[in-house]
Image (cartoon, rainbow, N blue to C red; front, side, top):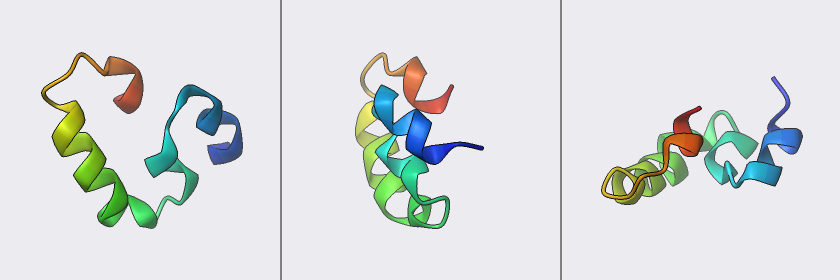
Amino acid sequence: MSPKKRLNKGDSYKSSGKKVSASAKKKIFKVKKEPAKCWFL
């Protein structure tokens, strides 16, 4: 798991595995409407 390396793709919510609770949930919710397959992959 390299969150610092994933940040390069724009996985801000992966930068803090624990921050995904709120930061990622809000980003994923908005990304769900857009073709952001890279966000989850």
